[in-house]
Length: 628
Image (cartoon, rainbow, N blue to C red; front, side, top):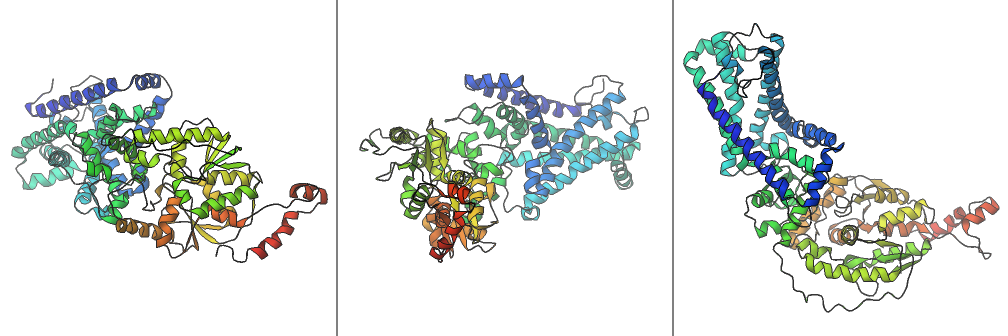
């Protein structure tokens, strides 16, 4: 058996990290709720295993998500992760070929060049020699980008990088040393024994002319082994725990396990899977617009992982979800922060005892709930009333005479128990209405109705409902050709995955242009109810930056589908801000009815003439101030 004492640091480090990591996995798994453990075992014997394996390759090794956002960051992560993985695989194949299929000690492929100086008996020698040098160069190229990113992050497209803790710096230094030391050790070996490939042999020839390699070679192998061992020992205590934890997390997530209403061991897995790459810092508007760069998930998750939560950091988040979308690991950052807020709130059981019993005097097919913010934007409510009338919808305005909050603002602050009282009150009102569907104009209300009310009837945001009216020809509109840009509200877009329906509605009534940041990358308006520790001037700074993004293509109108967004934008915008319902109501018309009771569609079939077009002439005469 080939052996030398210098391999001991590597061996000890490898054993330590494997025991520590698998030990943590064991603890996390058996601490999961019983239902989640059952999901895991069911997932192991399903096709989900293949889906999880595919994601491990695409995200843990190839880093597809990072590539999509930033080529240089993607290349850096891929070259270090995938390159190192290929070095391990190729090294093991090389030693197995050399030893004719025999099993070797785990250190043997890592230090193969030290133990074997004559490779003539190695099958496919030229291929292996070239491949090992090429892969080492591949990893070193990524390491070079990592060093540039650390000291000059803007060169690789990042405004900021994560501030490291002391132990993270130690781990980082040992990681940075591993591959340069491997290059030197193999190059010194090549210089002494005329081995190596295009890279190590060339460097070996150069070093042999200028350095006493016989004295430097062996200490360099020791240094290489020590750097590996120290890095492995540091992994369970640093950000680099994400390397192996991410694999475990992907399997859990693919098997249907996710963040619950309170922290579980799944949360621990997520926190340990956070690489603190810093992508969330750049995506956070608190950082980019207000220079608040110590509250993002890169820091918040670290505080939770090491059991040192900070209430101020916990509160300093708009809960807009941009970090969730940007996170290459897919960590549920917003849900984790919400659960942490629950641990700091104290509920007074008498808080909402003053609320009187609510009664609905009118029953109808559709229950309309405007919400608190809707009441603060009467033009949106008026527009919805107009749309219901023109589409001849039987509806009841269940909070017309006084709204009880949907409860989501309390949930965002962590006061879940208080929110439950409001939920119960609203459930009584909705049931009394006898409605078969619920429509709301507020994405905040929409999300809580969908996620937390467990309603037995479908819930629609008004953009969804309006589109259904249009597609069924129950609501007719005329396109104004006015230039309009759409702003995706956080709770409607990232929170509820509704992106296309509002755009489809706008395309029928206006000429839509794109914003700089839209869809899942849309910016928060700044009026978020999720944060209470920034002042009005700071909110306005965020709002103005968002308006800049929205108006890059010079639209005439900013359209939104959230009363809070509209109320936030309007004072800061130099152009009109309107809810999507207002624009639809302004362009909608009601088909005329003949005295004999035949509707426009029946009249068209009877006369062969589209009477709605006759109505269009009068409509335009009445709408000369359309959108003004």
